[in-house]
Amino acid sequence: MASGFFVLLDDIAAIMDDVAVMSKIAAKKTAGILGDDLAVNAEKASGFASSRELPVLWAISKGSLLNKIIILPIAFLLSAFLPTAIIVILVLGGLFLAYEGAEKIYEYIFPHSHEESAGITDEILTEEEILEAEKGKVKSAIVTDFILSVEIVIIALGTVISEPLLQQIIVTSIIALIATIGVYGIVAVIVRMDEVGLKLIQLGKKDNSLLKKIGNLLVQALPLVIKGLTIIGTIALLLVAGGIFVHYIPFFHHLVPKINIPSIIKEFVIGLLLGFIVLAFVNLFKKIFSKKKQA
Image (cartoon, rainbow, N blue to C red):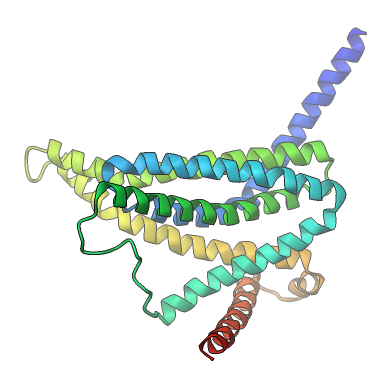
């Protein structure tokens, strides 16, 4: 009986070791999309009154956790009863990521004017109007998080799709939890950078004091940090998408080894090319739809 108990402990330890290894692999695979998730959420969580930044971020975090609770069971059911659907969703998600990355590059090269947000006016808003606008931004952030959460869960699940269902559940749930806590924890630090900087500037008694220099650095660094995250996130989107295409589309899987350049460049180029192809189709569809609407 005692020996059976120790055998059980050995089995549990072996499973946990496997889970730890697979979690590391899944974390590496999802790192790219997490970079984009971080950039998007840092941008959406900024722009509020200082006293409202953390409450808003907490509301978005709770929405993100609810998104994961909805997405995870559906993903596990598909994995158990229709595993091929995971691959299909993974490739479709890769196309979306590639499109998103290509669109950002296209808009940077060929910028066009956007309609001003309805919430941005020169009028002095009442407290009720401010709260209503805040709710709108929170809702928008949660919807965006849902799309990114689907991608994170499917990519994580795709790395362990050939493993037993229990290990799939544990690994993917760990990644989903880390994604929520890690991303929004870092976002909280980022959006408070300017507030911390202002406090340090106020504490600095002399103009050339170290506290004032650090404070000014933090205040000036916030927009640069968000912009830097956006650039890194865009590159990561295309790399993740390219990696999905190379691993799960037979044509690219057999084509890539024949090209004698680093795999990271291959994946980026493939992600970028397919991204621009999808972007061209989307823009064409928009033009056709707008013409029909005008007619």
